[in-house]
Image 1 (tube, rainbow, N blue to C red):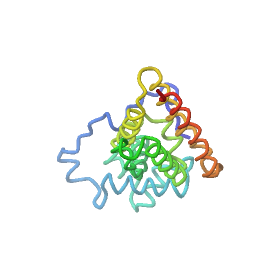
Image 2 (image 1 turned 90 degrees about the vertical axis):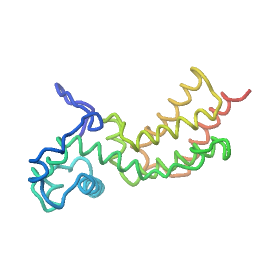
Image 3 (image 1 turned 45 degrees about the vertical axis):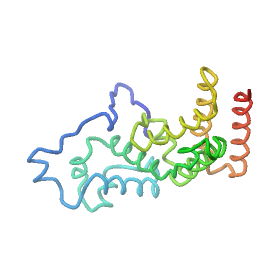
Image 4 (image 1 turned 60 degrees about the horizontal axis):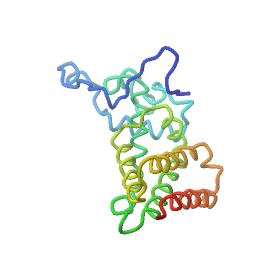
Length: 206
């Protein structure tokens, strides 16, 4: 199982490391027919079908019809590839209109749309929840999600510690539903979301 950090291990995020791909050796000797996008897409499919616990570079390579060492032309570690897969899955989030114009639709509807979309991603990809806890979530799709949530929180009118607390409550609610998303009926999820929104509304009331 992937953990946030194994004992004694120092791990950097794939999004913080600049990887050279300009050397003559990489251009001439890299395996043909592969690229990072294709490998990442195959990783998502393998995680969906086999689960996180059974994922390995060897199994991924076999599915692509290449050797495991071929994958390391495009990523330095398995953790890099899992981070890439995580951000690709988050890219399936259809950011609701309320995230782009909360004044028009109301932040409440925007937050409901965003939360339901996030729940659908967790349901479709059960491995997203544990990876979200293990990795820093700073890829472009994760940042787009965070920016959308920030705009919705801005639209509540809350400020200072109250806004910080509301933002934290929303994030904990979304991430906390990961393990139980397949066991919790959507109606129950929506009811809990309504309660959370009502609490924020009470704090935002004049």
